[in-house]
Amino acid sequence: MLGLVGRWEPNAKSRLRQAAMDLYAEHGFDQTTVAEIAERAGLTERTFFRHFTDKREVLFAGSERLQELLIDSVAASSLSVGATAPFAGSSAVAAVAAAFEAAAADYFPPVEYSRQRQRVIDANPALQERELAKLDRVAAALASVLRERGVDDLPAALAAEVGVAAFKVAFTRWVTDPADTALIEHVRDAFAGLDAVLPTGS
Amino acid sequence: MLGLVGRWEPNAKSRLRQAAMDLYAEHGFDQTTVAEIAERAGLTERTFFRHFTDKREVLFAGSERLQELLIDSVAASSLSVGATAPFAGSSAVAAVAAAFEAAAADYFPPVEYSRQRQRVIDANPALQERELAKLDRVAAALASVLRERGVDDLPAALAAEVGVAAFKVAFTRWVTDPADTALIEHVRDAFAGLDAVLPTGS
DNA sequence: GACGAGGATGTCAGTCGCTGTCATGAGCGT
DNA sequence: ACGCTCATGACAGCGACTGACATCCTCGTC
Image 1: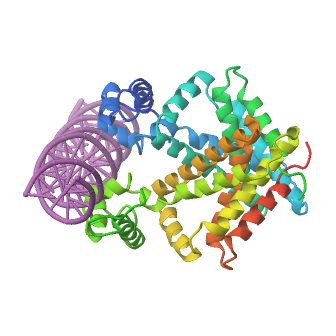
Image 2: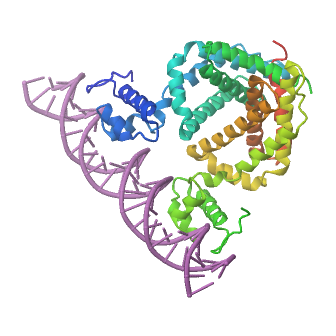
Image 3: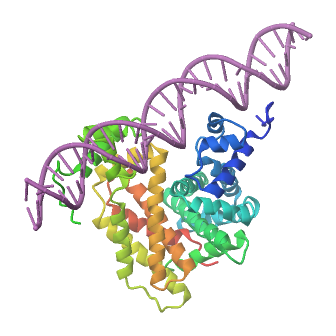
């Protein structure tokens, strides 16, 4: 269960991932064949599909960990569960924001790598779809944990979706930022921008 | 350009769509073969791919029209372009909200159909990915038109993403609502809920 | 130190989504 | 009648993905 990596050539999975990333970046996703990836990794096409469900999944392997980070963070946050209507909701977004800020500091790889990865993704609709799907699962998980913490259905769903929306904007700005500002700063800016963006009262 | 439908059996495209929907609903998406769809429509597999780029695209054919509706609506709205910082952003969300409310009244098919369609989509990850991709293109288009109307980059992106996020929640609640409340009501609730969900000041 | 269990890999064959190419046949204008 | 256009059919082919079975290494056990 701890991944005592194996009796064969070790790191098969990471070798496959590396080979895939290189080929995707060099020739493009569509022009890369799974057989080529496997060959470069010294393995077989069949083995590739034993490590990754998908040709696309190679680029999104670590996403479960991000989801866990966020969930644990929100689960451990001090939500004012007992508060009356509007406050329960607003502290939910705050908790989500805090979770993303924490993840921004811990989880993400260096900008260089993220940029290269994003270039590959942006060049292919199928990969963008997968990226959105991952984010949507994150939103669903966040909404779920918020509900478990006592937040009502509607505000829980809204807080989760809005939080992910803000993060999407922050992440995009991060990888396209020529000034190389830290991700956490972009996350703060985006969540702060939410206040300015919503009609104050209505 | 007006679709003078043709010299062959007319409505090839809608026959294909109907056949696909029926088969997807009956046997499931994965268990349905494109050849089967084409056969039921009295056509060939090859012809199917001339009408739809994808096996999935059958379920999302009308989405460009929704996008146009929203864009036109926002483009025609009275945005306070000249306003100073916070107000420009907030009226942007209001414009997006109004656009979705208008679309909710005009565009969407009856609940029955939407529910059946959604059942098919919810049963298949690949279809969910496509649905998210469509919504993301909507968000991108909204952000673009907001920028053209003079809204700054960050608030434009946030308003678009948040608007789509709210709509996602509203739509989900609509198709799962046992009380059959109108979609526009759910849209209003969701956008109203945004106010309660965000920390008032911070 | 042989032996059996388990797990990761290889091999093979097959299905199906999707594409390029060329042929066919109906309608339409001249 | 002639040819043009265009939706469709007919084929051939690639590549993603899957299921079934064989192999082979490693480790624990006797």
